[in-house]
Image (cartoon, rainbow, N blue to C red; front, top):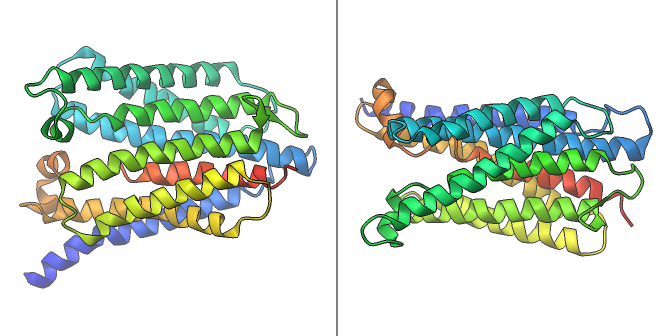
Length: 311
């Protein structure tokens, strides 16, 4: 029984590693800039936009799975709880479509979907904050731990923001594109770094709730902040090759899927394991949460590629 138990606990980690390696390889192959026939600069320009579309899609998928589980657990007591499911499905579809679109022009339908997703995420954040403050004790550790999670709707906000930025980038000229009054690579790097910082904050809170009982729980709250710092420095400093930042972002991207494997192991360790999945998936560590790191790290890599072409 001991061998069987150990095997079942580590199967989830193996699955996470295999899935992560496969998807990261797919992203890497798509990120070579082969989709454009208008020249190298245009290829990099559109490659960054498509990469942000794909990162938005991965975040939307994470939100869809996570909100489906959490809001099902809450019995959809408020009809507004269906909103993130609808908007994340639309954002996912827009991201998949945009990830294969080579047209250097904003797609109005996709852009509208992304803005709606960002608005839903912003409104959801307000709802979750209200849910915390209305409970006895108001803003307290207990309510931050067990009330509606603040970070969940922020992920939907980020999905919409990454997609909207991708669409806006498509309207910029291929040579020296600008976003928010600065070089596009710099702007994209700061957007991805901001998203990483928010994700690290949510993970730190929930892993603190778990008392860091497994040493692996320290990995995202150490790798994530360092990735954020390196990416911010790469965005603000003079453009040059930054292989350390690139390598660390790849590690952070892989960490997202490895974390999903650890969360699957956490589900397996509950009473009944995966045989009692309908109960343990609701009460165990959230399976869809770790890939948020992957999505934002991949966005950071895209920003880094574009930053490397700037002067």
